[in-house]
Amino acid sequence: MNIKQLLQKITPTEFDFAVDGLCLNSQQVQNGDIFIALQGVTGHGSDYIKQAIDKGCICVLVDSKDIECGVPAIRIDNLPAHLPTLAATFYTDASKVNVIGITGTNGKTSVACFISQLLTMLGKKNGLIGTLGISNSGQNSTNTTPDIITLYRTIDGYAKNGIDTAVLEVSSHGIKQNRIAGLNITHAIFTNFTQDHLDYHSDLATYKEIKTLLFSLDSVKSVILNQDDDSYSDFLNAAKGKKVIDYSLSNFTDIKTTEQGFLTILNTYVFEVPFLGKFNLSNILAAFSTLKALGFSDEKVIPLLHKLTPPPGRMQKNPKN
Image (cartoon, rainbow, N blue to C red):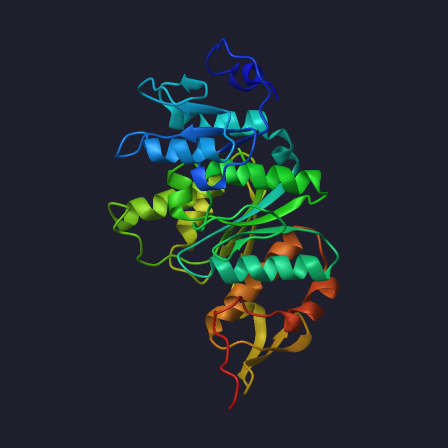
C-alpha cells in the first residue's frame, strides 16, 4: 500500500512510497514497516525510533512534535485515536475473519483454549490469541489482548492463510484502550466477574462497565453468558438485541467426583471430564455453548468434550514419581 493511501483519511502527505506493514513495538519491526511512535510518559523515545530504523523501518509516525530521525517522520495530532483507522485501512483482510471474544475476570484462557481445541477437532482451522501467545503467526505479545496493530496484522495474516475464525481473549485493559476497535467480533462470551484490576480501574462498577462494552458492539451477533454469576443480569442488559445463549452448571443432569475429575451427564451423554475444580466444568460449558452458537450440533461436540486438555500450567496434575 502507498503511504498516501494509508493516510488519506487522516492527513495529507507529500511523501510517496510503498509500505509493507505497521508496527507499534520497535523490537518487532520488519523491513518496509512504518513504526508508530506513540509519545508515552518519556516522550517519543529516541532509542526506540533508532531501534526501529535499525530493523528496517522506512517511516515514523509521531504525535505532538516534529522530529528528525533519518527517515521520513510524519506528525499526526492525537495519533492514538487514529490507530483503528490506520489498522483497518492497511490490514483490510482482517474484516474477513470472524472473531470470538472471551472476557471475564477468570477463565478466559481456558475457555479460549477449549474453543480452539474443539474447532480443531472438528476440522475447522482457527487462530488463538491470548495469554499463552498467538498461534499460527509469526507475531507475539506479552499482553492478554495484544495492541491493536498486532491484532490487525495477525488476523489479516489469518485471512490470507485461509483461517476464517480467531479466538481472542479480551481483557478490560484491551477494551478500555481500544485495542479491539473495529474488529469483526461476532460472538462474545462472559465467564465471570470478581474483584480485580482496581490498580487500573477506579472501582468495581467502572471495571464491570468496561467489560460489558464487548457485548454491545454492533458486530456481535451472539452472546454466551454464565448464568451462575452474580453479574449475569448486567451482561444480559448490555447484550440487548443479540442472540443470547446461557450456560449454567445446572445444564449437567448429574455431576460425580472421580479420581480424574468428574463424571457428568449432559443432554443424555455420559462422559468424564479429566479436570479438577468445578469452575472447569463451567469453562467447558462456555466452550460447548459457543460451538452451539456457531452451528455445531450436540452430536458433533459433546463426544469431544472428554478429549479436551487444560492450557499449559492450568490445573495440571503433577506426574507421579
